[in-house]
Length: 171
Image (cartoon, rainbow, N blue to C red; front, side):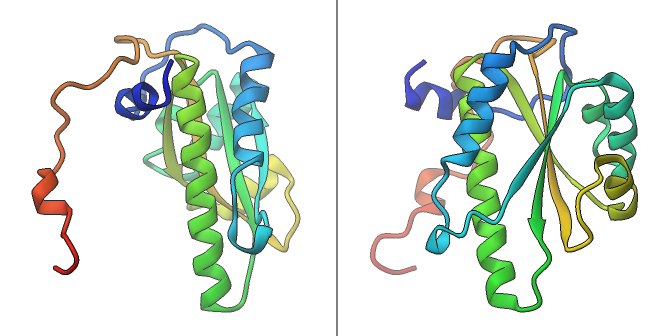
């Protein structure tokens, strides 16, 4: 798939088929995240990959809107250091957003759907994933093959009009 096609085909997929993701494809998605540029090359992320169904069902309990995690073929938990200042927190969140989208575009390129979710229950996430106390789970990225329809370019996206979003030189 061409890069542009992956961008315009990507949508949140929350209903997955029961097809497993080949290890090579999952590794490629994770490598895309690892290669993502970050502020000052800090790379403030670790990725915890879960593919076991019982594990996924437990992870889905970390946020009411994460039900899709329980039925995914794999879920990547994006983990980041706890920081004590607004500047580093903002930089980390921006970098994590970039890494998340890079992985989601890489997944789309492979025909794999994705959706993201917040992680509210940090204690439960820490018990399940065993990440260190100086880190927190920022997001889940659930992955799987779409159950409803393949990923193809979205012809009429429900987005604000280009001219309402893009401002030339000033607002």
